Length: 228
Ligand code: ADP
Image (cartoon, rainbow, N blue to C red; front, side, top):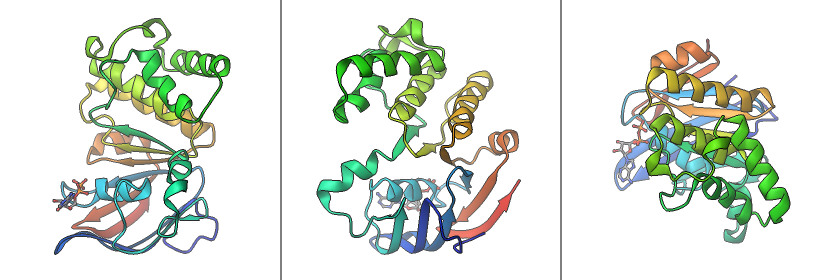
């Protein structure tokens, strides 16, 4: 269903994003329900990253509106953007871990920012690191880890705050096949616990393995919305 659902956790209405005279997204209307597993795909320059950025207010919308869990991004006051961002966990192709902080600290940052008390924070971080199979590497620093290990930490960081929505931008783009499978499995577990997942990728193999809804963009336009 495209643009018609009433209970969408992500509701996008006629959104256009322009950079000067260049349109990165054009009149996009889309509705994503709670607990959907959605791929956003299309060739390089199609608008995949731009779409994810608009959702977490990494960029402003040029035209149209987006509702996230009922919050209208166009009208959201500045002092509530942090609250909105806490609804998201985000994974990037290049992990974006802080090299000078160890694994535990990288994951703990999210909970510190949310003001969580130390004892609960430690329990949560240990637990999520166990889930991604990295509890033994708590004191390691990102530059000493493989790409696959770094992405597992990035997944831990993305889900530790119990977000509603996981956004992933080419999450397996820098990984070997085995690590990619582990990361996909971790994302699926988040989905299995009731989370909503949006993955931007041009990796057809990843889409084939995972299945789910696939939204195709080309030159900023939605060209196909199908379920595999
Ligand atoms: P994708 O993720 O599908 O490769 P993007 O969302 O990164 O595509 O980009 C969509 C289009 O918007 C591209 O033509 C890109 O050059 C343009 N674009 C993206 N970000 C910017 C920016 N900050 N300034 C100017 N143009 C941009």
